Length: 229
Image (cartoon, rainbow, N blue to C red; front, side, top):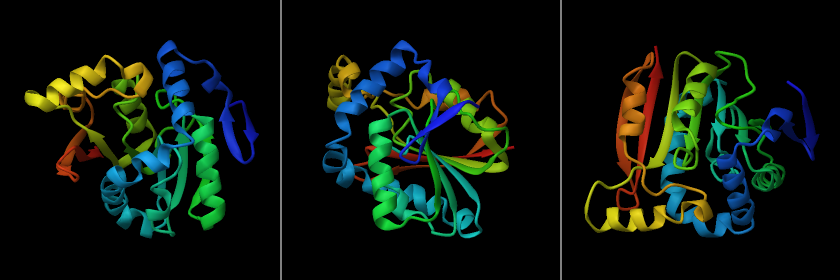
């Protein structure tokens, strides 16, 4: 792939070919970058810890892990230092903060960071032992295309570990999510996100659901582990 670097962060030239939806996401997260840690650290910490725990065995064996939507790198210090991690994100401002975290905390398990579209990963087939995507699916313009990419770069027998908000089907929470959904462009994520998006994809791909469980706080988030056949 053609690429360049900015302060140690790989910038894939293919990522310059932005879709209209990606441009909105990128703009939204450029706005979020300066305050993202302050706003989201506490509420999303349980999910990040659960994702890191799901990867612990593979990381301890020195496995290669792709962190999609790594953002400012909040989960990176939670990973076993024996793992080998590459983080990708669409937002360069977020990745710059992740790089600062890596430098300050000497996170040697992180092999590199790259600006990359989750639906167009610039890696060869079967490159990684695990793919983790915390709080990413609600951001993606085409979740099925990105899930296909996660599966493509994963080795047979490897796992995709997802942490995501799954939308409520009815009640007050569903009403609030619909209200927020009308403002999704500014938020940079989709509050209304049914499990069927993942379930329908699973039904037609060479993989299986190994685990699905709700997470704190208040069961707002769901962890799913998907094994590639």
